[in-house]
Image 1: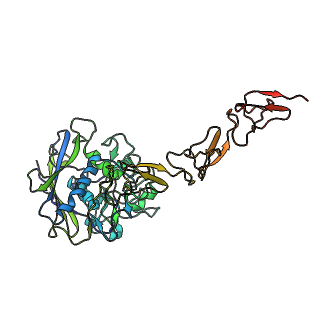
Image 2: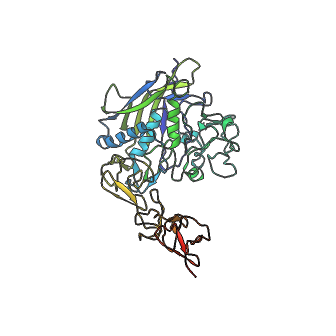
Image 3: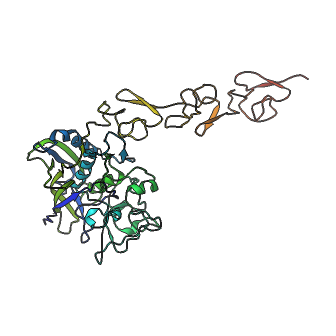
Length: 465
């Protein structure tokens, strides 16, 4: 095997917005753009792959790191793509840096993921670092043109001879969603030839792109950039797709014998011979946050695969760090949580940061959440909402459409359904049809010369002259 000795120091720049796409890998370079990097100990054998994570017991903040480290481990093990994962106004105080959010990013480096934007290592001005991760081609100068939409890292960027290093879904190039049933070399590509018609470069999950691609307040965890007061403790689609691509193994084909499932395991305090990733505060190692990584080529000499051989996360003490004391999604009340319904599902009343969502009410732990009926807002479980809770007007006190009515819009407008054999509202009759000349007309009013009776007026008698 050939050691690349790529002792990368992957740092997260403070207060710099960045972008990411469907995944880039720390070993990929202009000379080897197709390199896929795997976590520690993967050599081509499929099955569960356990990576032990430890905290340096001698480090400052050692005790405070325990719960955030466990939370980040759980997030990677769940491997679920989320939207609206960039949150302000949660339990992170203004002026503080969320340790768990930064840790999630650095842990991604330690298991093989690169910055998927150009980031600070490009040497470019901050304003240009959002562009999708690439090599600079010839003559070692990046070609940066945001295209007609003027948005960096969207699909219409004009990048000249820059070499794309990010993997995207063939024909889709939307970094905020995963449409493919499997993520491997049959569904994802780095080459630009599989882009959808009209696209010229791989798009990235930047903050600016979120609204454009249907996912506002979303960005990839593996971008370089965090903000004071920001919470970003959930993976986005391109974070997940990159890891799933790597887990398709040496053949880059899913559901074959070399596939693995990554399992991060909290191994307590170091030193421990089983630790694959150690977390500590060490001002001599970084000015903010970093993961120091070395890698080794695996497989045959022509292989495009490497694995991490050593990894360590370092943080600098010179910032106001916030250590999360909550585990959102466990169904228990902790810290400043307003609710916890036992999951991290979006738009079910209890948010991904355990705040009660607008127009919902939640009670108990695990929380039971219901939309607020009568506010004129049509929500997930409501069939209607007319702005009130009065029964008999088409929309009942539970915001469900009453029999014989039809409701639409928000606030809902409800009207009788003539011809359904149910007399409601202003209907004088309803014989189950709308054919005139039978006593009950198409507006469910009694026709001249007829009398109708019964709550379900299916028959009518002609009155005498």
